[in-house]
Image: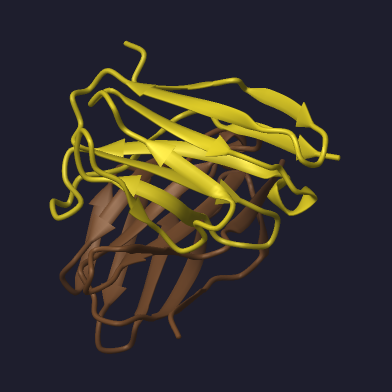
Length: 114
Length: 109
């Protein structure tokens, strides 16, 4: 009963390095999201996907790229990490954004950029 | 702009009742959500309101007044495990979720 799984859980990067966060869900959800959570701020949407092969920009997309090649996976990439990208990243999925269904979140990935 | 306001921190006593308020100003309204987030963990869904009134679910209740742009989460018979942050989120007319910064609830014995 995995739900939403994120890897890695923790990562430390140097400025300019690249990395990819992987999100996998086993609930056959159409919608997947990447959020970042910073102290004193609400969750902010980075990118989202409404189905396999689709992606769209959220509130704070700059510096990030995403891909949804398979329905169950949603990847978040940082091409050239910056200290401002130090944050906790949450992946979430839902059956449909227009249904009153809840979001199911992964456990989070804590990223530090030095 | 769109914004969600909720108190930063609240303290309550084990066994008591606490009300966490949330006010919002958004472009349209398609429902209001409450999530619970324990420190270092993922948010988990608590409640959803789209019509005015009170929704009760065990020890937790959520109230909505759309005309006032206001909601509250009521927690009864507080337990130590209720110590967490409580996130208010509103779905706007584009079905985008706007999140509040969360209210950290501290329960004292």
